[in-house]
Length: 199
Image (tube, rainbow, N blue to C red; front, side, top):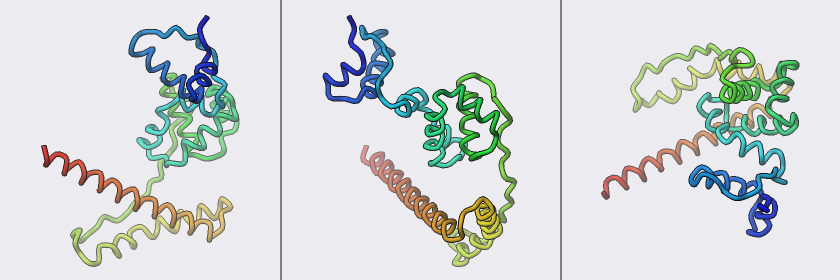
């Protein structure tokens, strides 16, 4: 008799979800494992993350933000299945626009059709830079170009119930995270260049 995921997890000191991932990968490589594929005892949220591993890349590809997948999986856990989540969002079209859009994209990837029209992107017009990258006023010019959109974003957030301090702090944190990400990406690029140079 085959062992269950939970039994294997306990035997090897792993989580049921990790055991399931290992077995599924082995199945793809060798064409079958003699293991009884019973449902894992891991939390539904963990199982959903295994079932839809591409969600993070999908959110990044469509610029939906790094937090949106967390909200998506939270809503998916509450609904119990992708079908129920999509049905709920059809009946109650309110809520976070980016989470709804991510649910639409996941459904479209799974079923080959969209359950509702794609999210309308904001038609933001931002003035292009008129000075070279090394110009001393380049930073100030960028601030002036972004200011109207920034003010609109703050106003929309305030209308949704966020306080001025909450909005300012959130934008500051997001900007800081963006700077760290840019710095890490540049360091990775430099490391790749150094590795190539030593070949």
